[in-house]
Image (cartoon, rainbow, N blue to C red):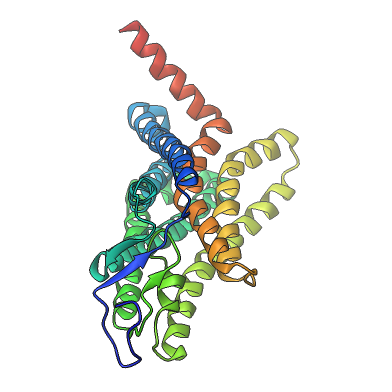
Length: 314
């Protein structure tokens, strides 16, 4: 199937080349990435449990954080387990069926889009908390928080359904080799022999999904910054910055790497660049989020101490 002629429009499978063809490197990467994946699972599950068990964290800010942890768990688990299995495989290239590839692509796009929209919702929550503190409990009601969270999932999975459908309808003429460790958008599109207009539309949709939420985040923080600068109290400014610092770190890491992936010019080795950026999205970013929120958030650390102390008393 790898060298089909130009009239071929269907492929039953693709071939994933993975991260490395050296067995020693594969074993080393397996140990490293397995450890990081376990840290990701433990960190995000711990965030979910703390927010569930501690009533002091039953606020809109931590509700959105729990949703973010769930998204990161799903995001990492949609890619990393297969990557770990491939790293231990003696085969240098791994076949993946066309249907499996499209399913993996669907969940990858869906969870990435969901996180984009969710980060924008979290920025709006911080805007209301700082710029409209007196009306915060009324505006950020349980109903609105639930609708924003549900809307993030609905938008993400809806956009992904449309994009994956159009990608699956493209013509693939061969070769069928994907120089990657999972079915990512760019490597799959590079195998298509469909006219560039259809591919350009898909990439334009990707950019819209990225730029739209990023614009809302920047608008929210522009207003937050203006409100902070109007605050005369140094203590008030410090408190406002501390409530936003963790979210700003997460936003910077997520959107910064997305901009590098989709907007920056490619290097001499674009495949290697795409693999590194994909590793950041699927492994590093979901692992760093709970660490950022736990290390920079006194309430999370306080909740952990209360839960541990309660367990000791029992």
